[in-house]
Amino acid sequence: MLETNNQLLGPVIADIAGQTLSDEDIALIKNPLIGGLILFTRNYSTPSQLDELVKQIRSVRADIILAVDHEGGRVQRFREGFTRIPAMQVFASAYKARAELTLALACNTGWLMASELRAYDIDISFAPVLDVDDSFSSIIGDRAFSSDPKAVTALAGAFIDGMQQAGMACTGKHFPGHGSVRADSHLELPVDYRSLEAVERLDLIPFAKLQNKLDAVMPAHILFPEVDDQPVGFSSVWLQKILRDKMAYDGVIFSDDLTMEGAAVAGSFGERAIKAMSAGCDTLLVCNNREATLEVIQALADNGNYSTSIRLTRMRGKAGAQPINDLHNNKRWQETKAALLALV
Image (cartoon, rainbow, N blue to C red):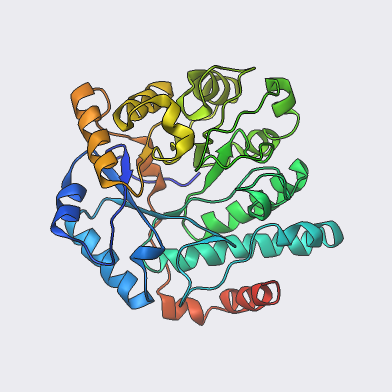
């Protein structure tokens, strides 16, 4: 895991509406319960605009964690001026044929993705996907490396190595695995009726094998009624007894977005926040709903027990990122970009 300083950060990761900061955004960012911002496609037009936005944010809160979903394929928020990252499943067939070369490319892909973001002072991309799937899940599918948990472990492990070489912490998602349920947790609460033992024999393998590399884990909004009566992100059984105690995991636990329909069973937005923190989440994502963000902040302030997150500081980007022009002249970047263009 990457090392960083111990300055405390608030537990909420929020978002902004546009490509520059409004007065409301500035007031929000200054709130001590805000620890990070996640950027979306709507926040991006060109590399120069992104550079100015990040500088504007840093001028308000230099210590804030800046995040983006930039895993590749369908989920790559910045396109123009960035290398097109393919969906991770393109590595699956190549891995079967040429394992060593494919692992090297997966590592270089993680490095390139992270290096390009770090060049613009973005701390983290929420990656990689550790779900075991090929086409079953409506929301995962080709975002997964493979339907073989051993292949997922090997390829994701190499991708993580590359990210960390670029100075970026990684986030394994969606614990304990979203690939075995068809429903999209953005739209509804998926239910997986398998036992814990069945999950451990398949979906949990990449999380268990890679847990010493994972700087952070993001739990899925999925209900496993044979394990607990609460969805994973609100379950102390999953987050404390299984992840923290049984698996001895000590990294960051990010909630998935609390505005997703899969989280609605936990109550109001404020109730979702308190339940997620009580279950074991260190940091809360609240996206695409400013009223929900403000409700979460108020609920945390009223509760009084969740003011800062020391674990979140571990997600800061490591110093020494290459400027984008230097990166474009880097042989590793050039060769990796060419190899990825052949895959897309």
